[in-house]
Length: 226
Length: 398
Image (cartoon, rainbow over all chains, first blue to last red; front, side, top):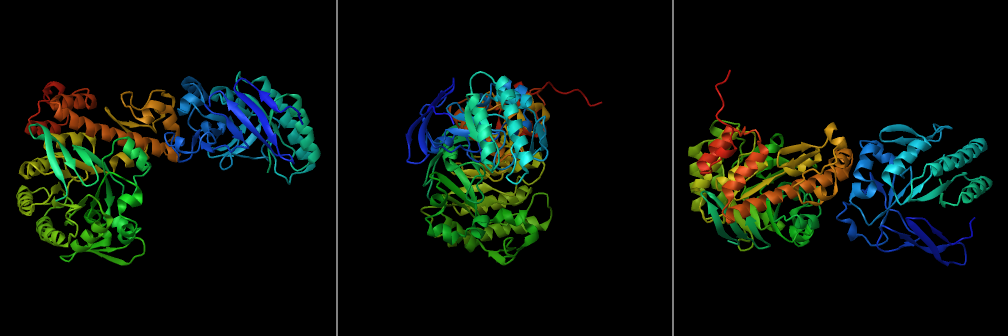
């Protein structure tokens, strides 16, 4: 694991401020777009097509600030009814959603509707079950979405598998995730902090292997759990 | 009487006024959004205040079923229950007689419903309706009337009109809070001018705080609709508010205001929003339409609402009918549009430019000048010259 306690990119600065006796740490996240820094650990607000469910943007300021300034976005939501060309034309997430003082963290899956479909994922792309059917997302397509949306933080494409798959399948998921990590980095737009995905199921060795590979690429990390 | 009605400006029959109610001083003409079950679907009370909403409507029938008027009373009245600080109007439950007729039986005593919640019979008498409305606590309450759809003809209409007059006396007698709540009478009589006249006179004799024109907005032809409104506004007292129930479309509101009406209510703006349709000066914008998917303009470039200031048609298109936020944003815009229309009607009359406003409104909606005949006829009676927005006289039909 990286021993540095701060990270910088053009859009994001993170520093650890304090540690517990164990491994817990409190930190602070600065995003260019957010007027005040965000304390970590921090919860991302779920969104559907970029806006929180049921809370329209004019009501968002009634939630505690700055803790509610980080929004999770799933790029897959926009495949239903909004082309990447149009999103680019509008100017990306901030312009499209009218939320200029909020930070967006793009992760392919969400926790309810766009879920990884490990059986259909193959060497070409990651498969997801979505409201508009099963979709196979290749790294290049994913990066096109990231380039149009322009979130502050984004995760690389991962091959997420459930804990009960075979060791062989688990190992494959790590190999693929690392390969896609490199493909995503190669296509990454300027600005925007990259979070490398860490998979490996419940195998400590595979998790470590994945983490070491991600650390070598000197990006932030995003750890997936089932 | 718990209201004051002060006319600030006129143009022929049209008038702009201050309507002072216990909870709020309103400017008329005004549109009232419908909050059937103690809420306007898709908006918070904060948002309603922000867009300039003055009065909202609650439904006695629905609230009596759930959560019951006793509970609302216990919790301090509907204002407190739903956290709405401004004015409120409850209807009597009468319209539900018409819209839920397969469950209802109307007699001289009242209306028996079969409760849609648990099948038990529910009797709504004039007394019961007023008692429920007394408990709910709105600024304006409506008399229980015998409502008949205007598409029906025959003796039923006459029976309903006379019954409405008999019921108004029972409503007045049952009303326990006349100094806090204003009981409005409702003019019935179908499309028959004789019956309507009898009903107007009967209600005016009772010297009520305000009057509504009921039984319209139910599918009758537009020509009959405006004539009934014109007849009633001409006969109702000058110094009291006139409320056309169930109206409606922006065009209808402009015409009725020209004829001398002051208040309106309808579910249309919020309901049509949930189907993906936005109200715009040109008429309607159907956001579901494929052409919207790459249209980066706002819904209405001239609109100052939060939705038009922040969102493109393309984004809203991706939401409508699929995500609740689409309904919320469109409902917000549509209600803002109706509030802006109310403000424009009031200010244009006060500032002495009502005819210009009407012409401008019609020009945007009918750019080719093909204004419907009923509108032209109504405006003639209203004394408003719209010849500048009408196309030249059409040539003989082929």
